[in-house]
Length: 133
Image 1 (cartoon, rainbow, N blue to C red):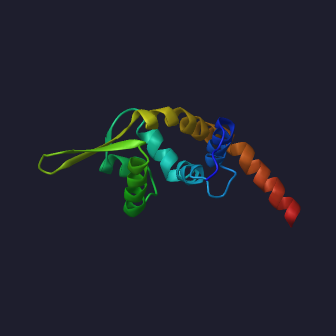
Image 2 (image 1 turned 180 degrees about the vertical axis):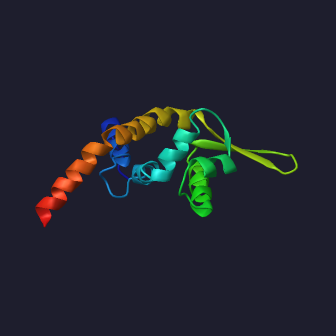
């Protein structure tokens, strides 16, 4: 078994987390955080914990199945915490973890950019579509 130098180990570690490499696990993370529901959930949780029903009400158009699936994925990735309180009925709150809070400004900036630039995007689409006919 050949031994590797420290430089070779560093190079392997760098390649290990290179999103341009197909097998890199960062691809899964990028796939998760680029999902529209993720960005909306993170934005909704920016001001503090919320219950499932609140999230469902705030985020128009998300199905209960998709909301549950997305929340579970975010919990698995360590971006939010699900807290169950023994009440009648049982209370379940979702809150960003420190890791989730560290991502939230980036996601919030993307959401703000999309809202601010939508007119430009719509104009570009109309221009593109008119040239394709």
